[in-house]
Image (tube, rainbow, N blue to C red; front, side, top):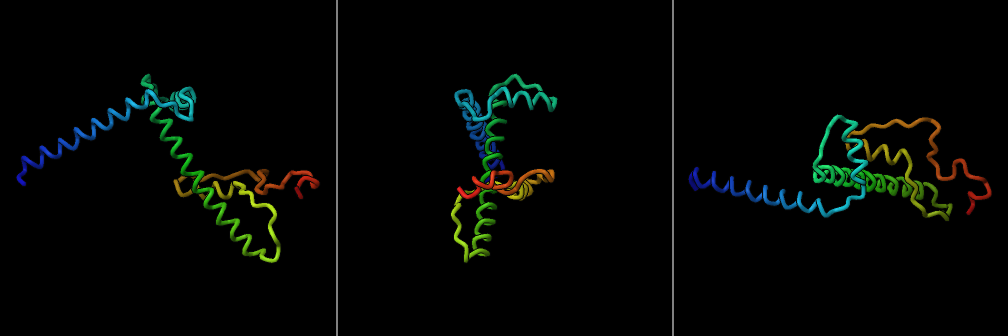
Length: 139
């Protein structure tokens, strides 16, 4: 393959990428993201960026939704790992409650994987029964 053919193939790939991107951006006009446009516009404006293009607003909403989904999925994995470790430690006790409870510890670990370090105040409850009436704890 000579250099001229390589350049033509390279620009053909770029044209394909541009066509796919244009098609994707056009599809965003018909898509209603989970995160409302107004909320995205608010935070984009708060950061100092003005954007009249709805497609870009929705692209940010989709990217944000994906990020939140991945963090929640990772936090779920941390929660499952933590609870399986607790079950191994307490083999003699049967656990009635099989609910998964997202704690700040799980969320912190998941966010740390994405470069977000959070510190929570001491008054946050990391136990599902913290602050509950003792009569309802057994339910």
